[in-house]
Amino acid sequence: MTTFGEYLDRLGGTSVLRVIHMTLNGIAAVAGMFLIIMGTASLLDMFETFSGASLPISSLVLGSLVVLISLVGIVSSVKRSQYMFGAYSGLLTLLVLVQLVILLTIWLRPYDIESRFGDVWERLYKNDPDTLCLIEKDLKCCGFQSPVDMAVPSNCATKKHYGFSSGCIKPLELQWHHRRSAALWAGFTMVGAQIVALVMGAELGRRYRDVRQGYQRVSGHAEGSPLLRASA
Image (cartoon, rainbow, N blue to C red; front, side):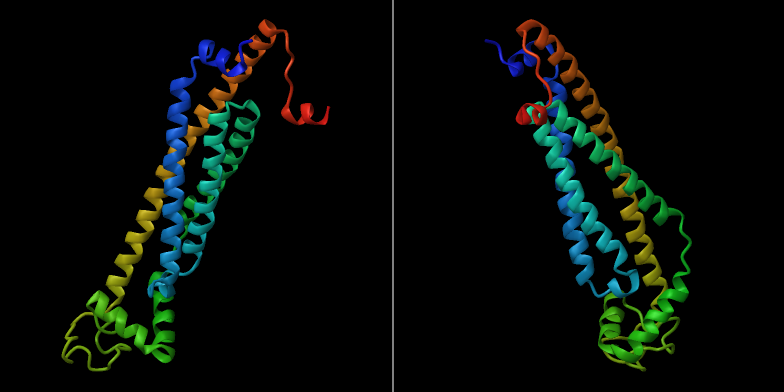
């Protein structure tokens, strides 16, 4: 007797869609793992004090959700399950909405960077001057606004192995804007790919439903939800 999978392959015309759908979800899973790695690395980075922990933590949470939902999408394609596609579509829709809210917040929210960075710099100047030394060497700058503004050491503009003549506020702002732009570009690109995968998943689910109805008429079997069959 012809199985539903064989019937689907013969009449459904879904093979190419399945492959593309699994590929998109595989790419999304890799991107999610990259988000997890980047979030972890950012939490351990010495510049995390300035950028804050909200973005790295958001990367960790979103990366984990992306990997989980992508795996659900891959399994639903492999199993060719109408019900798993329904669950996948619901989860992915929620994830896309959450990501859009976060991305739009990052994009539209005004930031008083200079004031915020100034407060952090002053706190480090008083409590953790060694970190300021590392930041000054990494960014090739001296002091906050200028080499005489909370510089560590105080003569870093003339001291050997330092000798930097400009303050660190501009390099810090530039680095922050680069990270923000990279996060926005990566986020909107991922959301775009997820929307494509969502549309394809909905189309696959529709085709599976239509083909299953035809299979039930041909085979004379009425197949319901796996949950209903298990409780029967």
